[in-house]
Image (tube, rainbow, N blue to C red; front, side):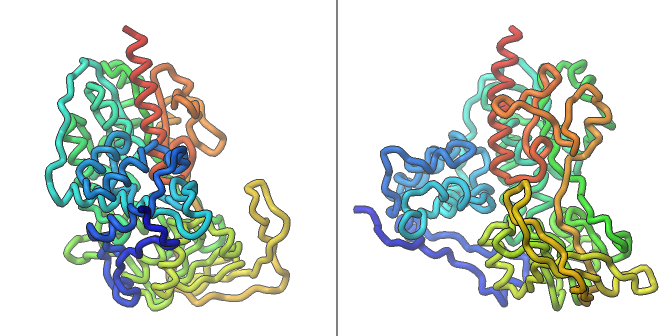
Length: 464
């Protein structure tokens, strides 16, 4: 009999006033008993809509059914058929807008906790230490992948399983992309990311770090070196700014730099690691997305007394996951909504002494469908801050476009790629992830990597 409880089995977590002082993982994961109890809430629908909501088409009812029967190894085998990074997806995917958003249990009550169950299965297998490397018959063909983020790693993994010799070119000294530099340790432990990357290496994927395509080698030169196809998954690492006075002051960070220094370079372990980061007593984070929540929660853990999320719309319009907003509030982040910064104030020595803001109100919907924020005249005020983190979006690095002039791009910098195949304007070159869409989710990037891998395989077979 199904478990007809209207509510998910609650995930154990660190207490808010404990976790906001450390970088250990917030959510502690299900026990075996909790996982089975939650899995029994699945109705095993004849026409499961949850699969439609998954960008990598995991056979969700099948893996959940195996959990319910206690077959955790079998559940992992089902997930790993289509998802190369399950421990990661189980933690950071916005399931509420994807698989869980399609779950029929959500019509009355809460959906099945698909993400938590995926995480449980992946962690179980990882802790057990017996992930099997499949036997792979090499086909003698070479493919280059640019970027070792979720899109590139997924594409590389799928191609490797098909028998291709895959080389990944990664600009940073550590592979993982946004998984390593963008998402904080307390949401996604780096040890888990590294374990998933190590498994790809066991599949035969070669990862070359400190390799900036466009500087050390061009896409044209990759073809000259014998690669028959190229996948561009270089992400969106170019930060956006508000273009207001004072953004060049000391104490003003892009969220990209702020989180990279903390996550990849482990500034939170200074001086054990030699990358310091300046955090004042009062920190303002500008923006309302997941990156803004990550920056705010990180600032609190680094010792800031007051952390403010400054957002020009209301909470209802925030693009951040509701779970992340909830956690930020629990950790004493303060939300300054319907507010727009107009100037960052110089303290006279090149630092920050405050931020001028103006109150906003919501008008008619704009092109995004959200109500447009409008200034309220004579509502200016000063927010007392000494550190500002700008988290209002990112765009693709223009380097590849500059060194590949025949690669078609959007006006804002994104690579033009066919949605169904990932094909670009250059024959044999495919692209996906944030380099195409702008900053989006990990699972959407992975989905584009899978799509491109399938297309590349068909393309190379068509050359023979």
